[in-house]
Image (cartoon, rainbow, N blue to C red; front, side, top):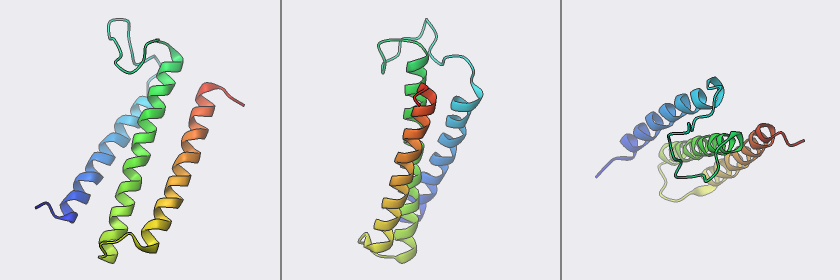
Length: 113
């Protein structure tokens, strides 16, 4: 059986790898990710709006992994099998922050005021 410590270590490594690849994708790339030869399985249309949607999906995935990692660390440190007050508060705070940041990111990328 996989211990919680090795599971958290694996989640942290995955989170860091996705963070660097997501930041590279969202910040450094200046041209659209999908070229004309590649057919996207997620989007029917191609263009800037599709690229922004894909960036939003990458950012949302990063925040979900961050939430899972922090909640797992809180649960491991308290050594409880239930969520408890600390885990619930951490989930609500990070979830709210993630949702707000994601909405703000999409709003800026799509040019909404």
